[in-house]
Image (cartoon, rainbow, N blue to C red; front, side, top):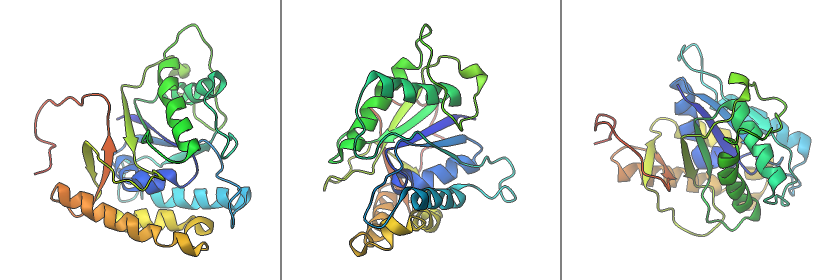
Length: 248
């Protein structure tokens, strides 16, 4: 099974962009770690303590029921703690990300799509792309993050795959090159987003976000003949050994 690292600029980005996929991967037995780069605060109705509680509540929704899925692994979450709305691409930031990549021994990384209106989103993705390279450098020590279980002595590695998920602030329609079937997971995805009460329940203007999420899942599902799906993008070719896993 794979070690999967899902990087989000703020708590709630991962749930919005790929909450259903996170749940399915965890139920399949993959080791999924969510990295929140910032705490997402300040916001009009939130504060750091409340946002942390909301992120923990969302994590409970995302994590699988081990009774129903005995081979599953709970989804874990860690906060890097960079300042919200001030994330800057730097060598220090790259090495902080690379330390998480090494500690988790990430095989697969998910990061926000690179075209976005939010400066934090663009910066986080650029940092993650470069940190993927830095994580393999054998002559450089990387800081080990607190709260991440260290695997394989945090040896240098280059994650095999880097995929982009969509949590963009642009008024733009996603143009993915692959979709992940999340049929049966939309209600839980919505519940994980609703856990962020200060972001999607209290602000009246944000309540429609849940409608958009449901409609998008239904639309992308219709593109591959299932009830719901989430879109992703890859800059690198994806190899196949057969057609068994392709959805009809």
